[in-house]
Length: 314
Image (tube, rainbow, N blue to C red; front, side, top):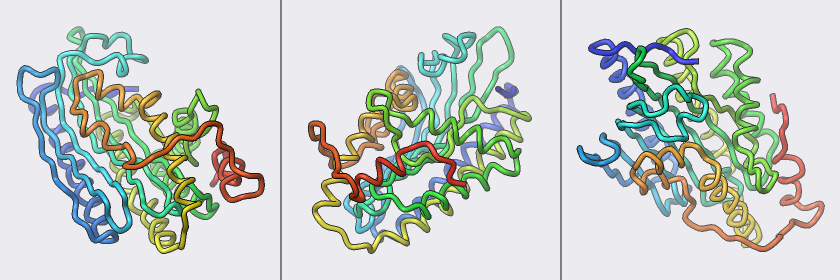
């Protein structure tokens, strides 16, 4: 479902409102990370001038080799393009070839301690003008948790915060967006879930611009309450080489998903986006091992058996 985005002054005002919210969200999240990690982000402001496939600007913020986070990337972008890439028109053939404008904040945090889960969050808006009808826009986003060692209380907490963020907009949304997340973050070639899930939505414009934008803000605002308590509760847990090696092995699944299946990665690369910013989701270190399987009854086996499965956590 999409909503009309009026052209002219009103449309520009709405885009500015989304941009200002997203920049503020990025700043709040990065400040919270610095408060717990102690290391500042490197700020990389960039722009893509006329003549390139995409025009626009952004701010990539990256923290590497911190006390808590081995790599934490949080990027804002606001770009325009002459033609929507194929990844954006799979479900909208009527928009094939339409010019577009896209804004978003996307983050992936890779903690150092294997007991702290990796997390991903994204909120975005995309507007397109097919030329034959009014300009349309839609929102998308969500958040999902990828543990290496499973704790039921962490999964319950994360999912409860996701549910709370959506509840003001209808009791039906959380079951839909939770199932959508489970479907989306699934490695088809491995027949594995990427993590314990969360929520995911796209092509959302129910109730018009104001209502859909309010939902996007609610999801974005819920992120810190969903994730940071988990970080604080796990960051000082002792670990050794075994846990570290398993973390690096499971990170391989994260890389596989992002490069093979992720629509956001494909959208950015297909549309001529900035590769360094698009690939900030990649972990700094990772390993693969041929047909590695954890021993039965171990915590590593419990992750696969009890956590990387579709489950109603709340």
